[in-house]
Length: 194
Image 1 (cartoon, rainbow, N blue to C red):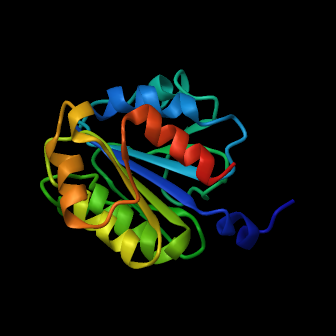
Image 2: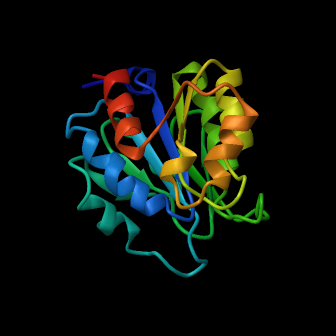
């Protein structure tokens, strides 16, 4: 059995999106195999009291085990975690999730920036951030933070996104390692961690 340290060394993949993000995930997630070694965290902007069935919907699009995040849940490699509505999602130093109700960031709670910046702080260069379709600039600052600690960052190609603002903001804010369609981003993630 792996220790917490060995589990953490596998790294963390964080995927954020908003308008059109679910449709992008429907194409990205099937590219990841059941034995994908990293933990994957998905955060979509959601209506305050809606989208409670997002984990169930995503579980039909991926071979990975899917879990809704609860406060203090451990980060488990090989699992896909879904951020809940109306809470910011953060990572703690001992590789567990934390939820809080601080003020919205970029008008969003959960905020992609909050997740990405927290992941960069805890996982450092073992962090990978992916920004999908969306109509706000949330996530761009977080991508920059991931890149600053030596992590990898990717954006959906704006031409393939129904919400072009979010991925374009990511591309404009930092040097992105990969720009592509959702399918191409899924293949890129798969090749990073075979």
